Length: 355
Length: 256
Ligand SMILES: Nc1ncnc2c1ncn2[C@@H]1O[C@H](COP(=O)(O)OP(=O)(O)OP(=O)(O)O)[C@@H](O)[C@H]1O
Ligand SMILES: [Mg+2]
Image (cartoon, rainbow over all chains, first blue to last red; front, side, top):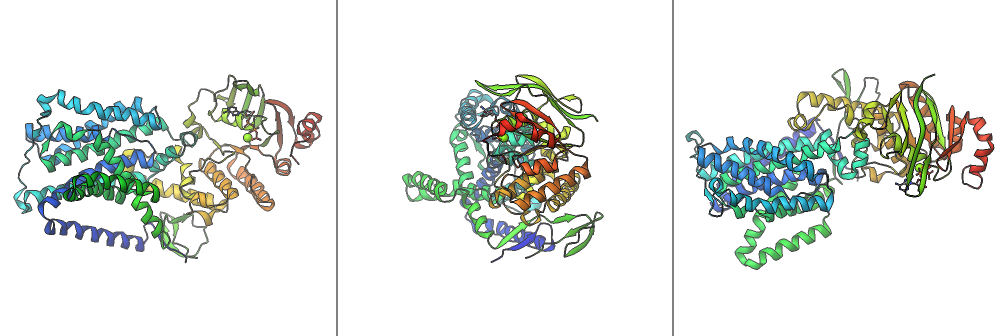
């Protein structure tokens, strides 16, 4: 069977994207109305995780660099929000860009030396960052609350929204996540995303093709740090409490696990992965405490063996037997192909040729 | 005629292996120059020196009078130099189109921020690149595999995809490492025709490493022969092929 070809940007493609968008919107609106408040809290948390995971995908899935420092940047965002909201009375959403910029700069600083290393060595150095983070937070307990933690009560939702505090927090989290997903998706699909893929494949080939590997790796690392920080900011807004021990190496490992399980397709992969790390252990431990770890570990192993490109990679491969989405063919006006759609920018855009 | 490329006494050894022992030659602007020699002669090593993958122990490589040694590797495409790899340097899990588009990297003004925001300028550039890539794909008869993942196409086609990617760089100097390897006879003829045409259209200078002697002798205006890291002959194809040193170097080797 010949798969159905859909051209990016064509009316059919737009209709499908709009339809998927509508379904997602409906689901997002239904969620707070049907889920009990604790589940809603979990979904809101997952949104924050998903942002950190999509950031990790930029350097790990795209550029092939394994980083365990994502918990460090998650903490930077979490504490930026905590301090600004609790001590300076900021509205949470305004603190996210501050945390992002801060993490970006720290990311650049740490990334410059770290990214000279590759593979296992990069993983080990970034692991060291993750390990240092918790004692550092405790060291500055005047600011961070250290071991005891810091309460961060967020302001009431604006009255025009008519929402309860939980639903408002959920709405903010989902909106911020949508924006971050859009940004990440744009990067992955762009020429810069292609350059990142080239780095993963071979730094030597990437450089020979004109990619400034050292600079791009550092910037991508810093960008992924900024994403983690936004996720951390959402975490603080949702939990309304931060304590040093929530920001250990374990979260970094969970983020990596989420990438593996979620898989190769950037956005859906990050969402699936974040739901996995948030819900699976919680559900399992409601049954039995030991079950959580066993189930988490077994699923991870099974995915790595049977679904090397993760759940979404697997689904994508299955779907691609039926539907293929591709770029439009853009040829100069002389192109004598079938299906001319009329001039665009003085050129002729040619629709899919279904054979 | 001015020299597009000057190789001057380039030495490079790997431990005890002397891969290049001081070959010197010039490639004139606009010519198709063959670089031949038995296996292990140092042809690929020389390409790697020109494109800054290997650092020679001594010597000089000049492109239009400009010293290349000391240049940063990722800036070579923006100087107008493109290459293909003997053993392919494609991103095997991406489509043909994506691989070809990678060649436009050095011309792109995109950065992480403009890409993330998908600014109008970015979109315009994307369209422009897409258009150029499609022209090149059509030119090389790769339209059918445009959206195919590279690892799913035959080796000979992958070689052509690499050529397409190199052309996407919009080079003035094109270094081809065994482009005809894995092609059938008729494909080799097509390749020779296309190469001559793009050379004429884009004022290219081509340095061609190839074991396919028929192709070298028919296409090249100038042939340089390396053996054991040294130049043993340099001249017109007809003269070179009669050169006793060349005949000796090739004796018993598989070159036809
Ligand atoms: N990275 C390296 N490390 C060690 N030795 C190398 C390296 N690269 C090349 N050589 C050696 O340098 C010599 C020249 O190799 P090169 O690949 O340049 O030959 P070639 O002329 O391209 O041969 P072929 O026609 O087989 O491709 C060989 O002896 C090879 O083993
Ligand atoms: Mg070689």
